[in-house]
Each structure stands twice: as structure tokens, then as C-alpha cells.
Length: 121
Length: 121
DNA sequence: GGAATACTGAACCATGTGGTTCAGTATGAA
DNA sequence: TTCATACTGAACCACATGGTTCAGTATTCC
Image (cartoon, rainbow over the protein chains, first blue to last red):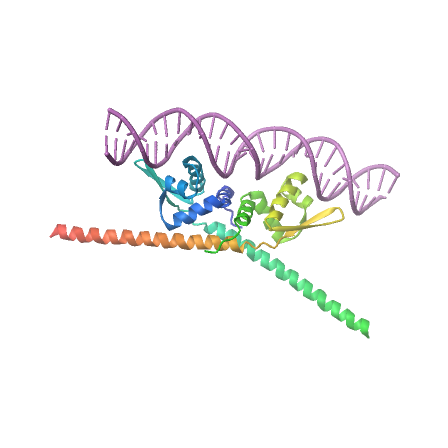
């Protein structure tokens, strides 16, 4: 099994586990923005928004650059491919398990029917 | 834009943001297990594991059923399709934005080359 | 019935999170 | 030079999280 750095997963999933941060990502996907822009858009103090951006930056989902007084935020290098892959693999096993369960239930039903036939004779 | 229940996203991403819980999911995808089984496998107290299972259960990723003394955990109804969809959509916009950036850079390069030719004359 | 097993719940602890305020510093504009 | 803007950092707050221990309760086994 491929072993990803678990802390990387922790950071990116934790970053996504907050509605404000998902909103910031969606916003930045539409275009760069300063901390002030974002703080304004999400009705929050500058300091509060800076913390969110910090979390996103640590997760690699956002990069920032300061020019003059303003720090511009843009979407970062992390494209969540490993996270997608993890979920996809999980879903695959999920499906396999539930198809197997279906087979078991079908088999039970078949046996039940056979039993009923025998009983009816 | 489709509006998912934000709390649902919060719960499932937060559930995935912990290595132990991802491990439990992988374990349960391979087969049902009791709380004791899991606590043992992940070297943790029963109480600690019960809390993790509780988080996964709230997120819909696990269901449990108590028969006699033992509570059996199995993978639950949440297949993370909306989470996958969110990430997929984000990646799409990400790609679009970076392709656009590439175009801009290409255009700049072309202009630069043209400028150099002019300068060379 | 008595002992072992499997869980449950309350309480506690250290640390993290999501926010704030307040007091800076650095930069840009007039 | 002075003032407004944009950020930064420290300190604080309430609450959540990831774990523990300890004291139950309910079941199962002998």
C-alpha cells in the first residue's frame, strides 16, 4: 500500500473541515485577493482571516506574497489529488463490500425460496 | 451553485482529518469489527476508540449495532460522493485558472520574443 | 451465583481552534 | 510630515478534540 505522509492528509482535510476556509478557496479559485478583501467578504476581522489563510497555506492550498502593504493570496500548489485518490480507493472497497453483502442477501433469499417450496410440498 | 449542507461537509472532512479514524475506516472496509477489536488494533483504550467511532458515526461513515455485550461497527451509508464532487469541482476551477495563467505567460513570452526581434533589427 | 468480558459515562487534562481586541509596524498618499 | 491603510503579533476567551482513568452496568461463561 502506498504510504502518504499522514500529517499532510491531516492538514488538508482539517483545512477543508471549515466552511469559511472552503469559501475562501472557492473565492480564490475565482481570482486572487488580499487578506482585507477576504476578511471583508467573510465578515471577519483581518486577524481572524489571517489565521484561516495561515491554515490553508500550511496545507499547501494557498500561497501568499506580500507587495508593499498588501498580502495577496492565490490558490496554491496542492491540488488534492492524493486526497481524491484516498477517497476513491475507500469508495472502491466500500462498493466491493456492499456488493458482496448483496450477494449474500441474494443467496439467503434464494435459499429461503427453496425452503418455502420444500415446505409447500 | 448547488448548496450542500455545510455542517455535513464539516463533519465528514473533520472525521477524515485524523489518521486513527482513517485507519479505522480502512479497517472496517475490510470487515466489521467490535470496539474492542479496534481499540486493540490501534493501541488505545476502549473509551478512546468509542469516541472515534462516535465521530465517524455522526459523519455517517460508520454504523454500529449492539448485540449482547458487543457493539459491532461497520462502514456506513456516507460514500463521500459530495466530498469527492466538491474536490473535483475545485480542481476543475484550479486547472482553468492555471491554464489561463499559462496562456498569459505564453503571450508574454511571445511579445518578448517579438520585442527582441524588433530590437535586433 | 460469581467472575470475566465488553461496553458506557463522567470527569479530567493538555492542547488546538475559531474567533476577538489591542497595540504595534510598515507603506502609500496628500 | 502627517494621516490613513494593511497587515502582524501577542494575549485572551470559550469551546472542541484526543486522549486518559475510574467507576459503573449489562452479558456471558463456568
